[in-house]
Length: 453
Image (cartoon, rainbow, N blue to C red; front, side):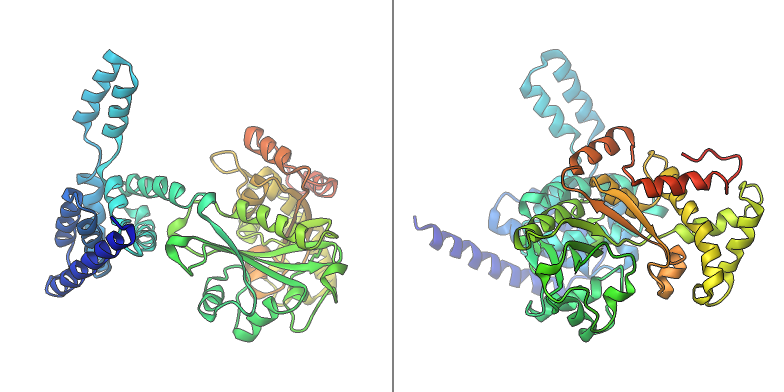
């Protein structure tokens, strides 16, 4: 039989069924019960064409639910589509008796929650992958108030880690000639340094010393997953404002640059939180740039330090923090409007804030023993070196508010990446420059009674 004819026939049947079900959908009151009924019908289906139509009907129903009905749907997923404890117990007893691959496979199947198969079948629908990403985005917004929902989220993350593995990702360069629909998304999704308008976007994409790369996935079309903005530079940049300024260019020709500076990395899909793209993106972009511009020697970030000022103010305001009284007084100057424009005051703050920043990045850990700062966790986990702490690297309102103007260079030394990654993962060792190490030693004089490593 002609396979093209068969595919066209299935597609035709699916489209007719979908049109019929859409007409039916318009007459159905959108609630979680009707959605659950559609999901059970989908799980019971054994035909490809009917399953595709049923999956689309269920996803369309979900899209019409209000927030409360979506919550009820997730509650049902957590309670009614979990693994069956009795089936697990029976499968485990069979495995203990036989101990062979057949009973082991049966145990694996018994342990898998029914909602994983439901998600797989929903993914049959055209556009189903992106619909499921947005479904998880809704779920993530409810996790804090519903302790039973993380189990549902774990199933989403388990499937997404396979569906969005590196082998499925497509790297594309973004420039001023990229379709407008994608460029508009770049404006919307920029999360580090806001893009004010189309002209601002053009300044970041069109000049010969700029590059932008994004990962896409075939199943979700022109929706970028993550993108990175790059400035070609002579030497390592320590301030972001010159990079963002209108008409400012550090090198006239790309071949004159010796440094590629990653100054903005933005994740685009909240529903894919926890799925790692950034490490693959940076490493592949380094390869692309190295191939295009062999003269490049340094690959470095110019990164924000979100949360640092909040920690700094908590340290200052806590009478039991052990902070040196003179340092406490100096940090009070952060409350003075326009403090960064006062040369003498800014110098006093620099001598206090930079050592404390080194301590914050090197010494403060979360419950799992990783750096408290999420940007540091990302780059150090990728094998970068904490190279330099830049005073007044970002004097925008956002930069002053989140990090007292600090920015950080994380240096990717190609011959060190794997070793740094392994040491960080296995022992929590942070690769850093002697300059940062010296700053951290100075922090010992500022925080009494606390061991500063």
